[in-house]
Image (cartoon, rainbow, N blue to C red; front, side, top):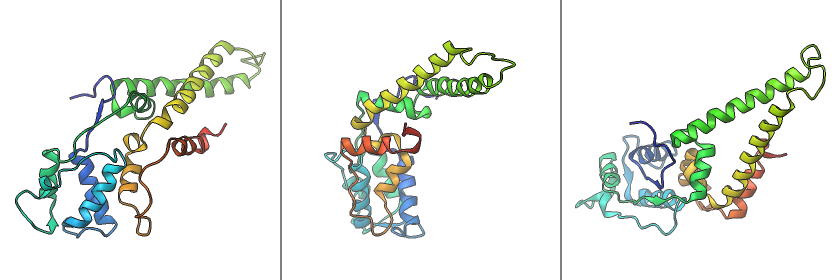
Length: 213
């Protein structure tokens, strides 16, 4: 089925997310090459995966093991827990849904449409810079100024909407790679916090090279 018109209202700890999570555990040397992972290691890093989204979320650890008391979990064990929703869905706020629309084209049809519109705004803006530098086409520097103004307004609205939403949005919801990296960090960084304050989120956003204006 195609993407929904609007971004989802809940974050799903999906089978795909847990599959990539297990692969990262293997890559970092926290799991066996055959995919088995010690239950203690699994609980430690799943807790980080969950805390990056909601520190108050309760995990049903028994759902991953069933009636077994094995100390090693296989992908089959982990998958059955995911299917049983051992980690419940998390509600996504309006700020986060707006940010998903602006940053993640794959989150909904609306987000994809917005990405296409902004792409053409960028294309038009760059084309205007080129055209306005050619006196044979644009004798005065103010030609097509109305179109240029519309593009600048679109970029300004986009930027300030992000500034408003970022402090109230959990980065794990829109930044899939960051979510996995902070959940399963490199050795020596396992004690770093998976949560960020609103001020830290805003600071991270404003410090990005493309956002320094």
